[in-house]
Image 1 (cartoon, rainbow over the protein chains, first blue to last red):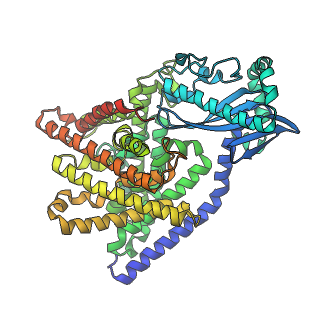
Image 2: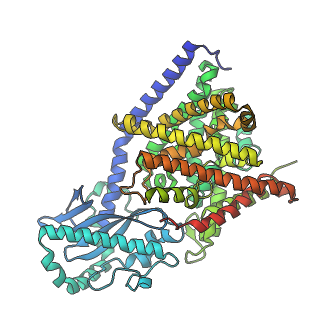
Image 3: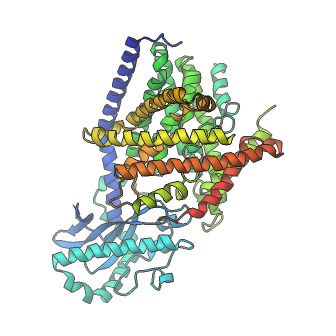
Length: 225
Length: 196
Length: 199
C-alpha cells in the first residue's frame, strides 16, 4: 500500500506532515487559549470566593502568592495560597484569613494524597468544616495526636498534619502582610469576639457564598454546586 | 454494511484490546480508580483512535514506507494535543485527574497498533469503524475495571455511595488493587467469553 | 540530600511500574526470562536517561523561549523515536546477541510510555522534596536514571517470579498473563510498604 521510499518523498512527506500538524495545533491553541485561561481563572476565583466573605475586588500579589480582597475601601481579608508536602506529594491550599487573624475557610487547590484516605481532606465534611472560623488565638493549630485542637482524618495523620502546617504557613504570610500594613495591633485584642462572629457567619455560609462570586457570568454554568 | 458492524463487534470481544490483545495496560491500570475515570479515559482514547485511524488511512497511500512510523506518530500526537486543549478548556477537573495519561495516549500501543495493522491497509470508513470498535472495547474494559475497583474500594457506583460512609477496601483503589482486579477479570474473561 | 531523596523516591516509593503504572506493556512482554528482562532494563535505562537529557534541553531552550510548549508532546515523541532508532543501530553493531534477544521489543521502546512519561514528568511535575518544585538539569538526570533503575528492579524481581510460575501448575483460566498480573499485584502490595517513607 505504501509508496516506494526515496530521499525526496521521505523528506517531503515528513516535512509536510510536521508543518500541517504544527499549523493545525497552532490554530487550535489560539482558539482554545481563552477558554483554557477562563477555566483556570474560574477555578481560582471560586476558591477565593469560597474561603472569604463577600468581597468586591481581589488583587493578586505575585511575590507573596496571595490575593487581597476588598469591598470598596474596606479590607475583607486575604486569600493565601499555601503549598506544603503531604503524604503523596504537594498539597496546595487556598486559605482565607480575615483582618482579625481568623481563618474564614480553606479550600484544597490540588493534592496527590491517597484516594480514600488522605484525599478525604478535600471531601470529608467534618474535617473541612472545622477550618471555618478557626481562630489560632483560641485553638491550637496542630492535630490532636500532637496535642493540638485539629481533628485529623481517620488513618491520615500525615495529611492532616500537613494541612495544619499549610494553614500555619498561611498565617505566617498573613502576619508578614499585617506587619507591613501596621494592622497587627488590632489582631490580638479582637480575637475572641471575632471568633464568635465568624462562627456565626460560617453557619450562613451557603447564603453568603453565591453572591460573593464576582465573575457572575462564568458562575452561572456551575451554580449546581 | 454488516461488514462494518462486524468490525465494531470484533473490537468489543474477539479483539478486545485489554483482555485479549493485552494492549494499553498503563492507562488501564492507572486511571481506573473509579468507573467514571475509567469511562473518561476510554472515551478520550476512543476520540484519538477514531480520528487518527481516519487520518492515517487517508494519507497512507502517499507515505513512503521508511518514514511511515514517524509520520503516524506525528499524526497521532496532533490529535492527542488537540484532545489536551479541549479537555483543559471544557473539562479541566477531569483533565487534572487523568493527568499524565492524556499525553501518554500518544504511546498507547493500541493507537499505533491499529494504525499499523488496520488503518494503513484499509479505507477511511472501515478504519473509522475499526477505531470505533476497538475504542469501545477499550472503553468497556476500563469502565468495568473502574466499576469493580470502585465498588470494592470505595463502596460506590459512579460516585453514588451505597454502603454509607466511605470506608471500602482501600487497597483496591490503590496500585495493588489495579493489578489484582485486572488479573481476576482476565481469568473470568478467559473462562466465560473466550471460545476455544 | 535532595539527590538521595530523589533516588529513594524514584526507585522504591514511586516505583515507575508498581506505583505509577508506566511501561507495563514491555514489563509483561519481556519478563519471561531473567536474561531478557535484564537486557531490556538496560536498554530502557539508557534510553530514558538520554531522552530526558535531550527533551529537557529542548524544552528549556527551544519550546519555552519561543512560546510553543503546546508542541511538547509531538516534539518529545519525535526525539524519543529518533533516539530509539539510534540505540537500535548501535546495539545491532555492538551486541548482536542482545539485539536478537530483545527482538521486536526494541522498536517498541518508542511506544514505551515510561520514556515519554518520565520526559514529560521532569518538565511539568512539581516535586515536593525539591526547593521551588521544579527539577534542574542535574536533578532531572538523577531522577530519570533512578526511575529507570526502579524499572529494572521491578523487571528483574518479576522475571524471577515468573520463572518460578512457569514451573507450577496453575488452573487453565489463570495460565499465562492473568496469574502474572495477579503476582504483580502482590508485588505492588509489598512495595506499598515504602509509601510515605519519602514525603
